[in-house]
Image (cartoon, rainbow, N blue to C red; front, top):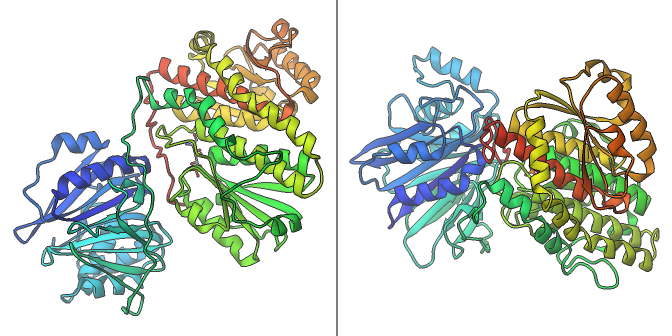
Amino acid sequence: MCGVFGYIGIRNPLEVCLSGLEKLEYRGYDSSGIGGIFEGQIVLCKKAGKLSALKNSIQLPQISLAIAHTRWATHGKVNDENAHPHLDFTQSIALIHNGIIENYKELKNDLLKEGITFSSDTDTEVIANLIAKYYEGDLVQALNATLSQLKGIFALVVIHKDHPDQIIAAARDCPLSIGYSDQEDESLISSDPNAFEESNYNIVFLKDDEIAKVQKKSIKIYNKNLDIISKKIERLEIDIRPPSKEGFEHYMLKEIFEQPLTIKKALLGRYDEDIFFEELKLSTDVLKKIKNLWILGCGTSSHAGRIASLLVEDWARLPSSVEIASEARYRNPLISEETLIVAISQSGETADTLAALKETKKYHCPNLGICNVKNSTLARETDGVILLKAGPEISVCSTKAFTSQIAVLTLFSLYLARLHNQLSKSQVKTIFEELQEIPKHIETVLNQLPTIQAIAKKYAKFEHFFFMGRGYMLPTAMEAALKLKEISYVNANAYPAGELKHGPIALLHSQFPVVAFCAHKKTRDKIISNLTEVKARGSPVLAIAPSDDSEIKEIADDVIYVPKTRDELAPFSSSVVGQLFAYFIAKERGCDIDQPRNLAKSVTVE
Ligand code: M6R
């Protein structure tokens, strides 16, 4: 994980790097740091805590270039010492790093035996010292020798005090982009090209241990044999608008309120008498031949995948399985050329999802990415992609991306159903018309904000929750429980409602509330029975139920009503209730809502 950034050029490197780090803070906010070269010496400033801590304390002389880092801790505690950049033992080299060096312990032991001392607990410092060991005047050569020793996935950016005119970068299975300008003498390096301030850069992406020598006026890329190679140069449309809370107290609340609009955007231009996707590069011939789906994702994206799996089964009548990407990559899956891989990721940079996708390539399966960030690795590396068009999601806790994911996955399931002759045009028309009503349903939920806030306040004192649901309400409950855990630090487990009595019900008592998602009509009577079972154990019960269910209030202590809709579309409104419930509990408990502890927006390590 972590964000790396570098700048060499005519502007003030410090200012450019701080601005780059702001846009990379979604990759980690445990600490940050900047390093440069001044009068033949490496100078550094690094600070534990959010970027604001670095900004408040930074004091560096006029440096000729800069490398900058925002950290999500993997090796070593969150403190100033473990913040990047790291120096080698001669203090000639400074290095920033994203990723994990799997064999760092043995490498460190070897270096210790050679008398080299370390001042941090990081794997990064090992790399800096290896480069120093191999350095004989050429930093590219030293880095190349070092790469051959390293196991893992990583992106590295290095400077040397004797080379104030160059920054060296390398990447293995980890995103790293180099941008350079035709107009100005400047070059930039970033984990994510969206962190470049302008959209008129020529951009190259490094991979497979390629090394870049980045200078003000030139960029040279070397392969493993140290031959200079030419790379595809891309021009990317980059959204350079600075993020804004637009008057909301938190990004999360702003993003929750954006959902009526973001869902409309997800649907826009994708139906004209039938479903279509302009940008989808996968041919209908390929999609007609598929016999099953393997859906990959992590966290919220995996919950969207669970909903998609039910939709595909119900409408397209195709079997599918949803796999947590970190597990999928180590499976021995029964997939083939007739399996469609669907990789879901808001950021398109989640390491586990990308790695699982890469694993499936050896089975020659066609693959599809569902993604919000159009320049992301996932969007670039899949055969076809459907973009969410939800706009940047800043809050670590995913909200609008989730509902946009389920919107596009609903459309895609209908699209597959048509290709596999399972639904008629008029059936799809009816469902699409109901889907178009969803933004209004969400507005109805948002209008109940005072009620949801009051109920959340009442439940904010509890330390443990069960969330339960059936059918489409099970992934909805899982997603709502994740929201609560993530931003309120409250223990919330989601279970299929019928499963509670097979063990977990033993935990229930008067201080252990149950939040029941009841909008799945097919199993409505069953969940009522489950509710009476938990009520009998003394648990407070909050039900999220369709507006026409008058009976639920007789059983539940509290009810939040959502507009009624067909089962397949019920996750939308109920999820928004879950988001607001978590938001107000976190607020009541005084948590850092947009940047919860220990987390990052984009998880770029295994
Ligand atoms: O960017 P991705 O969709 O691949 O991210 C996957 C998860 O890390 C993410 O959904 C995470 O679970 C959210 N913070 C949940 O709100």
